[in-house]
Structures are given as structure tokens and as C-alpha cells.
Image (cartoon, rainbow, N blue to C red):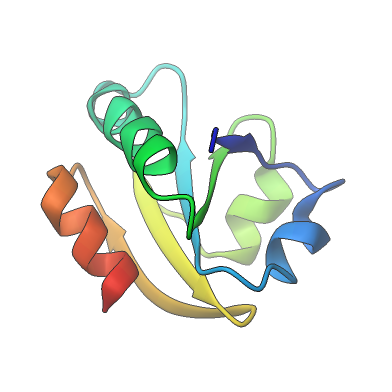
Length: 102
């Protein structure tokens, strides 16, 4: 499954997903974000049981504020519309998967 570009127009669909959701808050200019991005893409392709989305904090300031994003990259896991886990900073793939499973 491919990564969904999340914005305020499709966010309700993401929030109401019956699958666990991984959200990657990023910016194009952020070096660590560019390191995490391909890992998030791989997780999306290899794990159809998850909904994986990316949120550009420069374009979606309201969503970034709603989630209290102060540093990027920030990964947020939603289960049943609620924050189940979150982590700030670049993480290896296995740690990102543990966030989803945890």
C-alpha cells in the first residue's frame, strides 16, 4: 500500500481508519526527515495492515499544531482515533515498527 499525503481535507478519513495509523510529520528542508522518509515508504509497502501517511508541517500548520509538533521528524501512531505512541527524531525501521506494534 502506498503512503497517503495527509492534509486537513482527508484527515477525518485517517482519524476514522479501522487500521492502526502511522503519521510522519516532516518538512522538505529537514535532513533527518529525508532519512526517515524512505523507511516510512518501505513500511507502507510491506505492511498493508497499517495506514501510513505523511504530513508536511509547512503546508499543514493546523495539523502540526493539533499534534503539538515542535520538532521533526515526529512519528505518531493512532489506534481507534487516539494517539497510542509517538517519537521525535530519526529512528531506524525496526524502532518505527515497534512503535506501531506497541
